[in-house]
Length: 336
Image 1 (cartoon, rainbow, N blue to C red):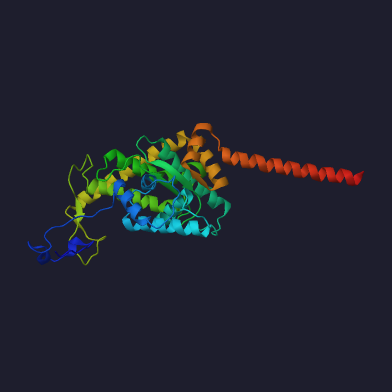
Image 2 (cartoon, rainbow, N blue to C red):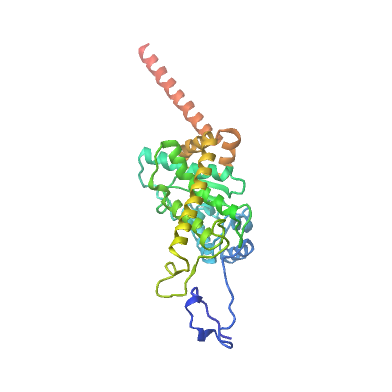
């Protein structure tokens, strides 16, 4: 039996695919939650992990991870635990390792001006508010303004249930609304926009265009596929798109894409303006503690406060008052 593997099936010579040769193809995609649990078991055999942490829990935090990503994740977590002289891997190490695999190591040495930090905080808070208020949105698990890679901050948003194959039109629209939330928050709070949302715009535009040209989700243009991946090898995978439509249809596609983006932008703006208080509270605490977990965000939504920060602040004020009192007492003794 001869086996081979490739991630470019489209460039294989047809002679290789004739009956009797490589005539059976097995597609190996990204693992689902059950697959990730089994892969994590393999890559954790020689690592000491806190018994309270389950592989099911780690798998839920890592949708879309490949086998290589999961191996990298466990190695990063082990390195982080070793650097802290810990005897076992804790959940905090897993969380940091997930961030590193997705976005790269934290760049705490990067210096931001006060205005830049405020813009980043409101940008990330905007994404979080949209995620909290949209009915079918992903669950916000972490918001941070600590820079990683080329990003000034990011949101970790995970789906309530994994959708391995299908996305509805409403799901895609809400995905676009969520991506635009950061830019909208900047506009509402500062009456200006920054370059921080350029990746969000690229992704939202790509989703909107795919809805029109590939998924047939346009009422005006109908259930027709206008673009598909080309078999032309030499143009490269990203540039090989075959277009079987006229210039008039191209103009209509552009109008439809703009219409979807505009509709989602207005919906995002409506949600941000309606929940402006929550936006400001999340941004305020982001500026103070830099990273908010799901539990922190839930507490802010329910109580309008963050107890772990308020307690620290109260202790600092108490210590400061005691210090001032002791100074005054010393001065009074000297005067006497």
